[in-house]
Length: 343
Image (cartoon, rainbow, N blue to C red; front, side):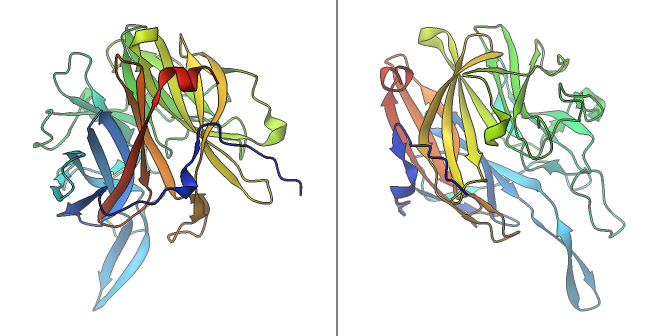
């Protein structure tokens, strides 16, 4: 099979070593599996920690019944604090779990933190939990300190239901990383979710809201150059960022193509002024890949947790090792805006 070549324009993340210097140790962690990371501010990250092993004791044996793709706790930490970071539980024990892809972001007036994620039904009968147990996306909130358990808003009803059809006539998939920001350019919240075009064809969709509770229908983003499904390119997820000096939106897209002899994983840069029409600027970074210990699938070993920018034209990318246990290994690298926007 012919290999499609996607040369990284900026850098090759494969060559970077994650040293102990850039390490955050997670303590008080029930499972210790590092899931998705939210690059909240220029020096602050929020870590989702997954509870992957669902077990039940039978006699003296512990039987693994399945896998919860959910989080049991999160932590917020400054990057310079590389010692120990205490976890805070997401929900009280009697509330059903929140899926592992919950995105965390600031309320538009910075009064609290919001979280949007899927939710699993309670599973108290000892049966194996189904992977698609959640019924939609839920809105949660907590104080900025993350010291209190999260509260599910809207009477614990989903703000976006799995019954809602996407532009592709199928329910949206919520198991990949979500991204939500409040855009001062558009004066509304913008949410990016994964929304497959077809079986095996990953793509993303955009929704809008003025209050983060009532959301628009799914909007299929338009790419320039246009998306070509014949290449089997996968636009798996998009992290949103507003670059205020230029009044544009940046999308950091986890992109891959697995039909090659050697599957390719990388980060693409998308640019937009309205969150619907996006200029595809191409591959910024190549990501290292390997088999995941949990299921044997080949996936990128390094993920991008997002970007941050300043008024001086600097954009910082935050990378971290995916699915590590008890420790968050990371590095961040800064480029000038002119360097990446003129590609």
